Length: 131
Ligand code: THU
Image (tube, rainbow, N blue to C red; front, side, top):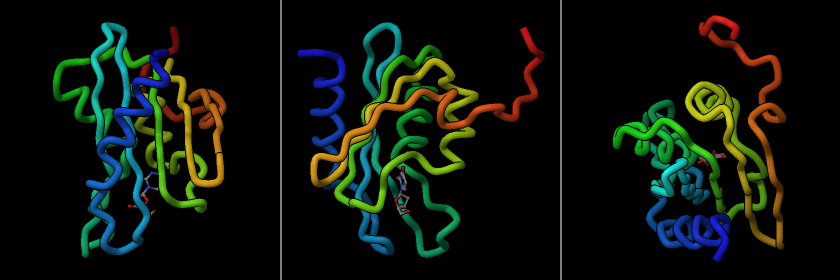
């Protein structure tokens, strides 16, 4: 199986665990680092709305928690045809913590799209010195 297929299966394995009481939209993500470690996560909502975290950010933060730095590929899966790409907040987070990431996005009705971070957030804001 390709990395993408492994990540897709990992993401779908937790999709039902999404806590989306308010939107009823389920999203799961699985991200791989350069060593082949996989971190999976789901969106978790809250009555306070703003504490909600998306599947993409949750997966990256889980990897960061485990000491991973070099993320290479992420699969995002959702049960909603309204969700077609990562939100703006996730784009900002991914551009800092996973700039080399390739994202494979799957939705209902055979929706599939690949993204790079550069495509999602060109001219990204950063406080890092230019190389
Ligand atoms: N959501 C994600 O988890 N990822 C995305 O790419 C877009 C949106 C979540 C946040 C919220 O729980 C729900 O989907 C509706 O916005």
